[in-house]
Length: 203
Image 1 (cartoon, helix red, strand yellow):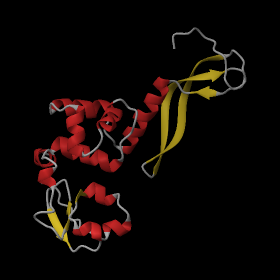
Image 2 (image 1 turned 180 degrees about the vertical axis):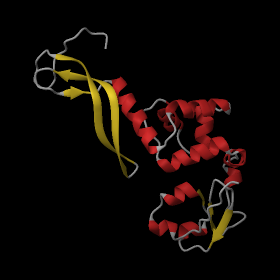
Image 3 (image 1 turned 180 degrees about the horizontal axis):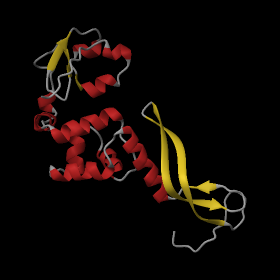
Image 4 (image 1 turned 90 degrees about the vertical axis):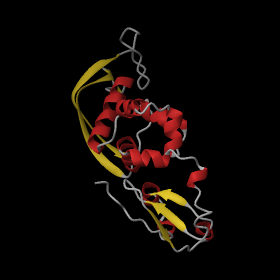
């Protein structure tokens, strides 16, 4: 915001937009199926003195998303980046381990996207558990269970590592399939019926 104030208002057309500080900015946001009531103190916004229209600048958006992450108990972009760098992983390497796109990891670390609670838990487990990192760091070929369990569908329940076969019910399951407990939690009821999930908690 290097341009001098006042700015022209896009709502009323008056040149009366200035920086304004809201002592207690309150907002309710939805994320991952839940609603969160947030209160951010001393938030700087752009406000038109004529029509009172408010616009949130980038700094305000960053403070609001940070407050949302804290309220939801999610890792911040800085925490994700530092944890990744501690493990000496590139964004692409982390993305490959988690089976997501490299651009997704980039958006998490630049605050362009807030990860879901299930993915946040997987991130924490990945950063904290060497055994899980080792497992998820295997090649795609090593994760192929079709040769060892051709007529089974298996589900990995984490943060412990345990593979439990279940009787297949669909054509897809007969091909053999590997998924994490997080993925299973987000599947449709019909898909979840085709597998057995046993959560094992790390000691």
